[in-house]
Image (cartoon, rainbow, N blue to C red):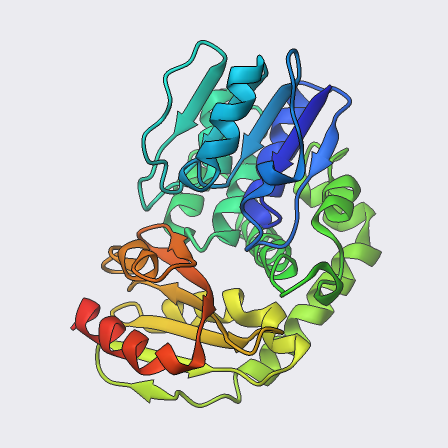
Amino acid sequence: MHYDIFNGDADGICALIQLRLAHPLKSTLVTGIKRDIQLLKKIDAHADDQLTVLDISLQKNAEQVISFLDKGAKIFYADHHQAGDVPPHPNLTTLIDTSPDTCTSLIINQYLQGKYPLWAITAAFGDNLHKSATQLASSLNINTKTLSQLEKLGTYINYNGYGSCLEDLHFTPAKLYQEMASYTSPVDFITENHLIYSQLENGYLEDMRYAEQTLPEYTNEKVALYILEDQIWARRVSGVFSNDLANQHPDRAHAVLTFTPDNDYQVSVRAPLNNKTKADELCASFPTGGGRKAAAGINHLPITELSTFIEKFDAMYS
């Protein structure tokens, strides 16, 4: 059996689209909301099973990886998050690059020698890697209109992955992947599957209108922290709102907090675009935190820990 295991955001989805366009095969899809990253716990792989794992931290899934390898499974693992110690094993193939200016889809684009670069550009925009996206686009002589289309699509796909549960999302990541997977170009998807695209766009624009009315809870020259309302729209928009703030204020770090059903906070952190460092360190200092240097998060921050988080956040970037 083959399992395709991928993050439910733009990067994970677009990485798998590229791979399956290049190497079609029947597989069991394993994914979830963006913050659902310990996806290997959802399966029980055995000898001769093959796993493709995309855009989730190896460090967070190391126990399952080692267990599956010991059982005789083969694993292809591509990612750009914290990896920890990569276990040496003949059945494990890794493509891991934790540079703050890359993402899994860009890694897969290199691996496939640029077969489907428009999907990689879409994903890079979704991960708020605008410079990397435009650099790849410039090498392909993509016109301004097409580039704008890819930027919007990447943003909308990424937006769709956020929520506290699948019911918060407009589409499950597996469903959205299946809607897009047959298109060699994301532009064709936008044109030919406009109903799905329009629903994503309309949802994004409506939720962002709510978010933009929110005032910061704490701010100075170096950092700004926002707490969104306890509403579904807030959980959906937390990541893309964080990216939008980072783009507007590239010298400032941002944290966007939303309430969870467990009566605590989920936190999205963005390092300053002009200093893409330390977001992973900050979030990893809390039990349910992790991520990348430029963008990271905490799944469950107790409300009583808010002042501690603000102190650490301020100190990290001041």
